[in-house]
Amino acid sequence: MVALPIVVLCSRRGSNLQALIDVNSAGALPISIRAVLSDRPGCEALERARDAGIATDAMRPRDFPSRREFDEALFARASDFDPALVVLAGYMRVIDDAVVRAWHGRMINIHPSLLPRHPGLHTHAGALAAGDNQHGASVHYVTPELDGGPVIAQVAMPILTSDRADDLARRLLPLEHRLLVASVALLAAGAIELDGDHVLYRGSALAAPLKMDEHGVLRAG
Ligand code: GRF
Image (cartoon, rainbow, N blue to C red; front, side, top):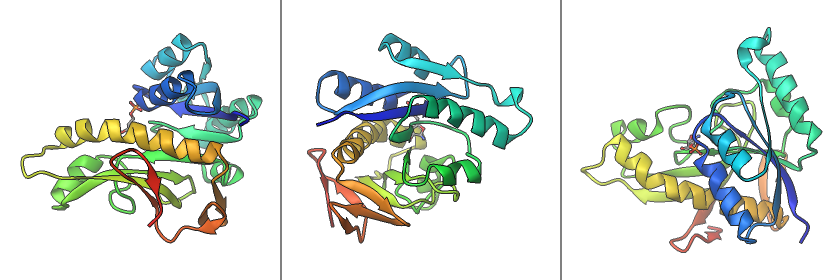
């Protein structure tokens, strides 16, 4: 299988990036991480990329006159690496609508909630405050609506009565890693694509997001 060329955008720790790097290095994920780009020059994700021998670049939003000009510059840099897919993995900025539209069907995000529940920030506290009995993570295509694009796959876990927000974050993170890796694997295999606002799985529109089972396998309905 030909390796899927990707560019990863990160803002902070980069543990989701690390999951992609590790599985790829082990020969179990046919991708080529061409570059890791960031809006925060000192972030840990860039260090992880450099340690793995991956090209990096960072730009500061404050060095640009507007959000659009920053995003155009960042995505022009991404284009230099000719990715088939851009992966937002802990990328904490809202991206300009026009730039998002230019990458329609070629950009995914990992979000720590069971979308459409709890878009935006503070998802773990939000799930607790809402009295939800389960929480989880979603991988979705990026559209101009924040965390609102078609969902490819989700992983769910129960919320325990003793859970606080940091418990949920800690328990969810390893599941996020598996979800992102499994989703990118399907994209690399050509099993997932976007048709308008419908996710196609092996050529048929998904009625509901794929669900990750306890073995880390993504399954339809
Ligand atoms: C993850 O929870 C991700 O879902 C969210 O931000 C966090 C990033 O973690 N968008 P990391 O930078 O990948 O470690």
